[in-house]
Image (cartoon, rainbow, N blue to C red):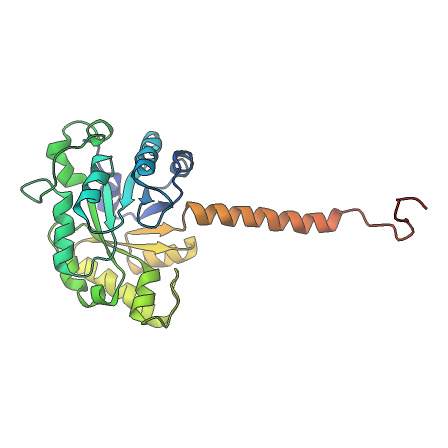
Length: 274
């Protein structure tokens, strides 16, 4: 089986950069996969895509060698297993609030005797390399999302779940939940209580010997997160990057056009004569 490059990076003490895909299009995925990310996650939870889109996006990413991840819509065994059978090398599961839920999630990703994943790797048999059944348990990554006050209360128990590879922090929901709606959802939190919560998650992951990941809006904040001890950061995503680049292009054009446009002659009449 093809080895998971994220595991190799982390074993060397190197952080990894993850990209985010929420536009259901294989060409978009192929473009993003060519940009140098260590991994790319297809967002089936909130992305504008379905299972078929996810499958074609995984196919489009294959040539780049980027590690393919999938965020599933919820903790539901069927979609977790289908994402793996389609070729995902890791699954991010949202709204994991208890150690029991974390254990259920891990069980969906592992073949017996480590879990109850059903065997039928339809595409993974071809895309992931030979000997998949024997090696998948050791290469597939399981990331539980901590993004609620309840999950923070159970943080150490979740982190200690056997077979869990890491915790992925969703800062938008976490800030909304911890503040009981006082803080608007968003990335790159600067509130002291939120930075304290992020650093608490890092400490819990280090104590449990697992990885910690954070969704960020900018490279600058992601670099701060790495300094705090996060092993993986996601910086923005396809839709936001597209919108940002398009907006910057439009704004720059308007600026330049306003400086170079010909000035109207106040002596010209309505027909353009004199």
